[in-house]
Length: 191
Image 1 (cartoon, rainbow, N blue to C red):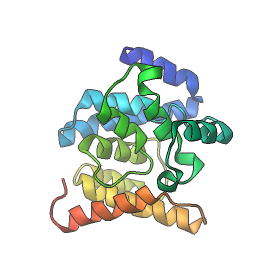
Image 2: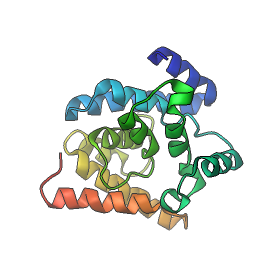
Image 3: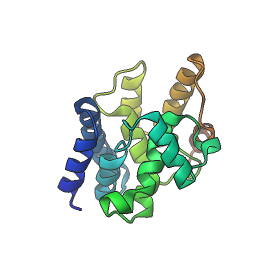
């Protein structure tokens, strides 16, 4: 599929508000990819597809996750299952056979330890795209242009605080990703 065909397929699967978010993520992922030296084409591709299954009903997400063998212990809440589901269906639904793109889609919500550059770019782009409005997002946007890993570490902290404050479940992967990001920052290895 061409990028335009992928865009149209995703547009057909999402509400106008969710699609506007996806467009924002595409623009931000492209900007961050350029800033940090990631593959811009892959960043755009992953950004277009990352929320393709986001608006599926919970029962469909759970059924598909079971069918695909998604590890619920690692991914946790139903709300994050759209990432691993979309990643598993990249080839079938979009004709995309690329492990980097698949990982960027799979882990865009949770993060994970050992995230590659493309994964980190797409994950952060999802959190700071221009349509996002939540306490602290302006600081994260500023950090995103200066230090990718510190921005991710602070983003994970904010996300975890929000989930815990609301008594929501937390994905194990997010805690592990958060700890690794802070380790890179404190060890002087951040980008």
